[in-house]
Image (tube, rainbow, N blue to C red; front, top):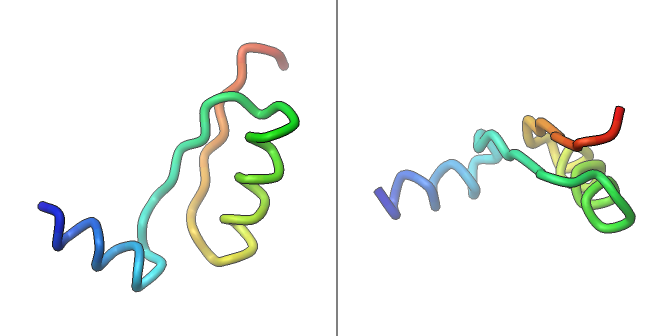
Length: 46
């Protein structure tokens, strides 16, 4: 399983979830999206 995850990260095919889109989560999600990862952000506030 570790090899599968490592491979997906290297190939940028990993799907990433970021919980909390505050002052840390939102820039993190945006940065990952700019690097061609599929990102889903979840936050309690609309």
